[in-house]
Length: 390
Image 1 (cartoon, rainbow, N blue to C red):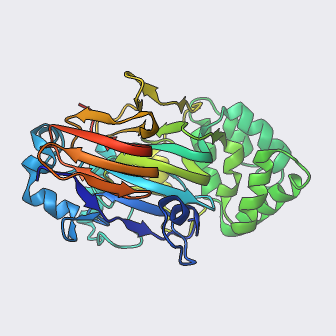
Image 2: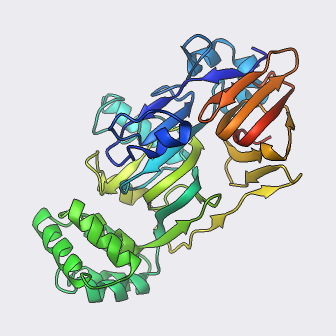
């Protein structure tokens, strides 16, 4: 196919999702249920639909040369290697990390050998791919990312939960593996000890005006027996402004707290959870994957080589996210595909040689096949582009 394809995308309704952020953003009517994520892409779990309602993954299977092209097929196989999402969190997501490529292959094969169905609620590995990801804020966005220094964690917890964690806090002083030993012990506390821990922490921080204390109290109200309630004291708190972003590599412990953003990742659904969720939790596997090192998260800002197309330069082979503000005039991009264009905040006409232009209004999107030699964007507002780096 040598023309842009309009996409219809799937809403994921997780309990932490906002009921109104995504509908308002894309100009849709809310239905009172949470709209946590809108998936744009060809992931087999919830592929976008195009060309008469056909799933995008099936279209790619039928025409890989035209839709994803030889370059992408040689690197990743005949598939779209990224998944693009609009994400809107009204409540915190689970505390989690993602595997690297080897861990994903091993974990997927291991669960297959055990006969765990792919759609089983207690499955950790739903495919054999790693899942590096980038989140770009559309407005204020809060997250917890990466362990703090063990000495800082120890000092904070000694004043917050000295009784409940009297036996565990000293583990942080152990050379070499202190952080790993402490975290594993914390996450494996029995339920009654967890309740006592959460109650003591919430009480100790009841009058603390700090944002970390406020998040502990909020989490304690929702998860009164979950050691993940202490995550704001263990991890770095990051507050993104609009257009700022975070890149999350393998083994990095994190959770999104609140906000709306655009998320792009390798096309995978592998998540290892440790708490703050009613979904499957696998503490043993989480601890096996985590990188127990103090890491201050880097806030990314979009960069431009031509003053029109701004991109987030994340170290991922599968994806790149960028945007163009069309109020400054039309923009032409050579050989952009395979790509997904998302129109936000205005209207956009997507045109390619020898094809009728495709009109996108706010919240609508299009797939740009690899066979297109160039694409021109006209209109107003901002168009976001999810692409595969060349």
